Each structure stands twice: as C-alpha cells, then as structure tokens.
Length: 368
Image (cartoon, helix red, strand yellow):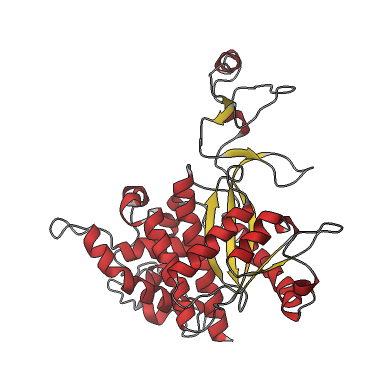
C-alpha cells in the first residue's frame, strides 16, 4: 500500500534528544569529557556571574559551542546559531531542550570578556590536557616542539605607513572605487618597522622561508607530547620579536610549572632549531636536545654522544606527528586564518581549537 504524506503535523510531539543520538556515536565520548572539564570550571563561572537578575545563557553551552564549531568546521558564529535551531545532535550536545531552539549570535560577542576570553580558554585547554594525563594518554618525559604561521584577518592593502603618508595615495584611489580602492605598491619597500596594518595592528608582515610570499600573520607554536601526539601547549606570538626556539623553551618551562610530576627529558625539533641558543638552553634545563641536524653544521652540545642514541632516532621519527596537529587545526578546526582581530582573541580561539583536537584524539584512543 502506498503511503501518503501527512499535511497536518501532530498537535503534540514528544522528542527525547538523548534517544535520537545513537549509543555508539563518537560525540558521546567527547561530551562526557567536556562535561567533566566544565564541572571543574563551574566554581569559576559562579564567580563571574551575579547572584540575582535574569538568567543568562549557561556558560557551559557557550564553551560547548566552541567545541562544535571546531569539530564541524563552522565558519562563523552566525552560521552556527542558524544551524543549531534544527540540528538535534548539537542541541543534545549543548544540553538544550528542543523547544529552546537556538540563541542569537550576538551572545558570543557579549560574553567574550566574561567566559570566552583568552584566560578562560587557557583554563579550558589545561583542564582538557589534565584529563588526558589522568587517563594515562600523555608522556611526562618526552616532547616535540614546532611552529607554524596563522594568517591574520587583514589584507595587504591595510599595511600602510605608520606616519600616514599613504593616506594621500589611498584617497586618490577612492574616487574610482570607494568600496575597494586600487592601490599600487609596486617598487615600494614595506617593512614592519615603518608600516602597520590598520585592520589588525597586532599582525606582522612575515614569510616562513625564503622563496615564500610574505603575509600578515601571527606565529603559532605547539608543544606536543610524544606518547600519543597530544597538544601540550599552543602559543601565539610575534614571529619577529620572539623566535620559535625561544618560544619552545618558554613552553617547556611553563609546562613543567603547570603540571606537577612533569620533568622534560627530551625535546625533539626540526632543523630550524639546530642552533646554539636552543641547544644550550636545553642543556641548561637538563633536557636532551633531539634536534634534526643540518648538514656540515656543528653546534656545541649536540654531537655523536646524543645523535647515536636510540632515543634520538625515536624522537626524530615521532616529531613528524606535530604536523598532524597543525593539519587538523588548520583544515578541520578552521584555524588556517584567524576569524578575529588582535592577538588576544586569536589566542583564545587557538586554545579552543587545540583543546578540541585533544578531545577528539583521546576519544579515538579510548574507543580503540
């Protein structure tokens, strides 16, 4: 018998969101981890909110929304709020009832200073990593350091002279196209000491290597533990004022101070870290520098006594896994280019994306 569509929907429908999600759905494992982390942060949320007044959107839902945004490669907060209204899986993950639906996208901007700031994002990232340590997924001895670049939300047209002499050139070009003026910078040297972006002053003009194009960007540096390739730290910085080797040593010091029982014994890195300052910095901290050596370059503190060890070969093999972190953060997490202006807001989003990577990684490890 042919079935016919029902034009008039049922007057009353009961929906159990928990039953709509399959029992073996991978998001269930991630949700249990996020709930455990947010339970630890609950006392902090109590201090950030007043005791009286109208109830706001729960801060737990805002942080969970950040996790979903990274997991499902949502390009904007407005698009997330649009899809949240009809996505039963996301409503279940956020612990929202079906009749509550979505919320306005402006709630993210209003709550940035309170629960979505870089400080809260860092606490979220640290609690996620501490949870993976308790489960035994991380190493407390062997780590890898590497850096990359994150494009800034600014165009090269905004990179003008600090003294304002470029304004006459821009003003003359506005006559032909006020919305998108044509500016010719050919033959004019542009440097960070004389120029600055008017869109994002925190970004700098930088290129990763010779032969590559220069872009407005931030430097990003990751510290990875070698047992299962989890991200132990993720720091954004100015790649000109602070080199990757300096940030790597700072991350190593901070990681040992934040997590009791961590004593870094080896620190792997690629050839760009094969330099005197980094090797000596590791030796001063009693860390074996497992750095890939450049051909015909000798650095004091790194010789055959280190490079012939089996642990050195293991570190060189495992250090490549840090590229998996960068690949996921940029391709899936949508962090190839910042969606915010300023170093602080970009750093906050970086903590959320890196923390989400750890959540996904530990959920897969537990399932395996």
